[in-house]
Each structure stands twice: as structure tokens, then as C-alpha cells.
Length: 298
Image: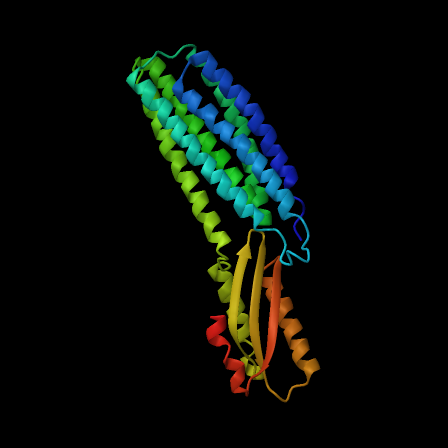
């Protein structure tokens, strides 16, 4: 059972609020469309953090009669929503950048604006590292999406700050919107990747290949006992994994012996895949009807 992860989402909400204020101040000081694009992305960060918070609270709910497998797929909804918000922010940034490219303006108080923006980036970087560490530890795609979004925001800010400094040094005003367009292109990639991964998760994607191979190897080890298997199926839902398999045992085994074997197999699979729910189905290996369900299960 995973510990509640909502507290880390609260950390993201707080960071997003602080960076929005700092980046809007940097934009107000400089009138840089690049810094404005950075501030708009932070607004997306706040909305995404709030959605992530609500979905993590939902995902932590225990299974019910109506939702016997729990609510962990709610994390994919948070990740998909965050991807959509990123794409919307990219469109807004591109619009502002094109407008500024057509009507370029000088950047005011570049040094002060850069300092404020870098402070906001430091906050985002620190929070992103915390979230990513927890996401990897607890296999949370919602926290991972939030962390990677924040890291994208950090690198975006670095690029924007570099552009503001270059504009102030060279006097080429159109470099500011050009960098903003590059920022938009970068976050389109991030948003699209999050959407893709979320959709794969909602389609009941199998657990990672190495884990499936480890389970198959474990089951193969029982063949010396005259035991076989088929219909090995797996799926994952954010931090939870599900494995089902049909175990074929000699027909002259007692129910107790077959049950003990199934319990042993389930325990070993759970050791290989932490947080896994395992279901086994026992069948007599000599009975042809035991194999009749293979086409359905595959």
C-alpha cells in the first residue's frame, strides 16, 4: 500500500503560486514576451498541480463494491489533463510571440527581471526534484508528470533568461519572440508525451517487459513438478499492477496441495512486482478443456 501522496501535490501548488507572482513581476519589470510566456506556463503549472492534487486524493481511496480494483487510474486523468493544459499554454505563448515579432519592443530593466525569474526557477527546480524522487519511489505517474512539467519550466526559464540577456546586450528585439516560439515548441513536445503516456495507461497497458519476463521465468521453474501455466496477463494502473495466470497441476493432486502451490506462486510474484494484485486459476493439466480458454484469454 502506497502512503498518501497528496501532500507532495500541495507542495507543487505552493511552488506554482510563488513562481507565478515572481514571473509576473519579472514580466512587469521588463515587458519581455519571453518572460510573459514563462509566467503563462506557470499558470498552467498551478492548474495542473490542483488537478493532480484532486486526482491523488481520489486515487488514494480504498476499493469499494462499485470500484473493486480501486481508483488508481485517476492519476492518468491528472496526467492527461496536464498535457492538455501544456498544449493550450503553448498556443497562447505562440500567439503572443508572433504578435511581438511583428511589432518588436525593447526590453526594460533586464537585469532585475532576470534575477526575479531565476529565483522562481530555483523554487521550481527544488520542488521538481522532490516530486520526481517520490514519483519514482511510489510509481506515481501523476507526480511524475507534475515533476517533469516543473523541470520543463526550469529549462524554459533558463532559455528565456538567456534570451533576455542576449536581447539587452545585442539590441536585437526580435530575438525575444523567437525564443518564446522555441519555448512553445518545447512544451508542445512535453504536453504531447504526457498525453500519449496517459492514454496508454488508460488502455490497460501491460507491466514492463522485464517484469513480465521475470514472472514467466518463475513459472517455468515449476515444470519439474509437472506443473504448467497459460493465460498470463498483466496490466498496470499508475502505482498498482495486476497479474492473472492459469496454473495447470496434475489431476491427482489434492485440493490442499494445489492451493498451497498457488499461494506460493502468488507470493513470489508479489515479491517480483511490489504493489501487485495477483489472481491464479487452477486447472487439471490432463484435461483438454483446461486449454479451451486460451483463445479467449489471449
